[in-house]
Image (tube, rainbow, N blue to C red; front, side):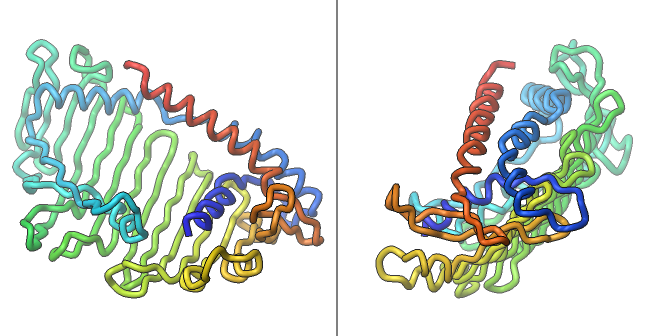
Length: 362
């Protein structure tokens, strides 16, 4: 099962095709576009979150570390791991927001909190305004003398959760924005519905703008079925999105039976479904025919959905293993590795650069 999911993730990682015409592109055009994927992905990954917005969040955290005037609640873990093996049920539970204990009395904290560098603390004006919490602080941290950042908590609501182990609060609505020198850098809306008997979510919705990106995520649970979707936009352009529907054998979400989903990257969309129950019922390693019977993957242009190719399993005689290939509409085939190797190299290089950036002292 792990091998199947790994193969699906590799296929899903890199498809990014540019095709602006209404008519279906030719096979030759599709192949040429695939050859350009690595260059296009490198350009896409060079766009980073605006540094000023990130610096503002770091500065706010530093100020709150010195003086927390609203009594930030403690984080309560919502997922406990009984083993080192992650199941789909664990993955579902990790979609939960961290719960908080005790509850946060939003209305008692409304007002304006202005940072004073000389006293290294907040000057508090209670009930002004009387419907939100406003923090004014410097973008360059606690030693700064110009309060050019405004972080506003417009709303915070939570609900009491109680189970056999105790009681705590989970957020049901959070609305926050951040401005630096009167320009919006962060805007957050979170909404959730919880099972108050165990703290598991019935639904989650998150919309986060962190300049220049907008991320939208949602989670829905309907009995033994779970659905997740995530969308990332750069400005008004939909860069990448993904959705997945998982069917389980029971409402306990222990054993997955089926999976269907999609991954969209720029002008390409990968759609597929996976018959998990049939695959897990196979004795020994699955054959190529069995893989192709129970795993269905197809590449389309997006958003017009012209078919590019089927993604199929085949036996690589040279390396003596089952691998993936693209079967184009004219019947020609190309090993997926011809396009994926250069893409993976770009991703690995960029991930190393990002890791180095975040480990540098600020």
